[in-house]
Length: 301
Ligand SMILES: [Zn+2]
Image (cartoon, rainbow, N blue to C red; front, side, top):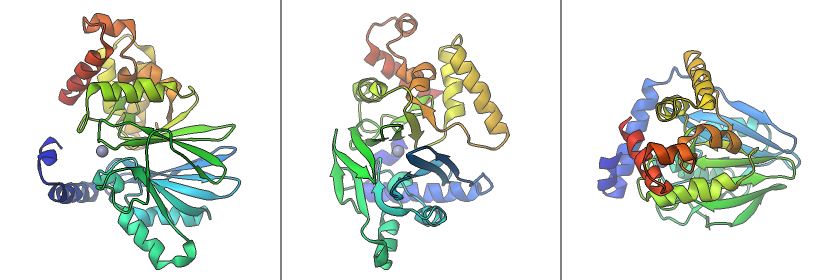
């Protein structure tokens, strides 16, 4: 992807689109089934897309109002909307990359063709690379999905305008982290610096309640846990999750998302850079330097 960053935006978007089309064709035998987590107040459906992306449909149970996160395959999303007879009227974009925002225009066009569906509001960071953006958001902006409250976290680093969406009711909490926080890992620093990722992971996401469910943009759990296990071979939580990830992979399932903030603090080395062990490992008391070195080690892993 680093070469793509050097190309003019439009060309790089096309190349990325081509890459994902080709890789999704070669992986059509991967499981495509959705997984629905019905809680008391909210229902989150994980919808696999492309090679290893996740789209999420988030519904308020009381009002059946719904939002979709990163609908790169909009027709698949609309099938699930119909199955669940919910009312979709919000699109939440985590960042502009094609495999996340590449379905925005097509979903917008479906709404135009079906005026009885009402208006589709498109949320995302303020960035003209996000197609059909109607509601640009910044840190601490809030809105609702029915009776669920949404708070935006600005997490620049993977991209300059990356947003994570924290959704809560009085009983339940979930955060949609795009390519900022992955299960046991984090996104590459394409447009930002280690201190920005530190602020995102430690300053912002770590401060959420431990029982907040984490829904990330991709399933990279197995590779991330293998990496974490090389950094912290004595971390029992990482070892146990690695075994679970290996079993899930053998069964052809992608079953480990969602994680929780509490679990990430135990298994995600990028969330753990302030642990004393890391200061010893990297001979540094600067958690931002440690973040930088961890990321470059992971890039070569
Ligand atoms: Zn991305």
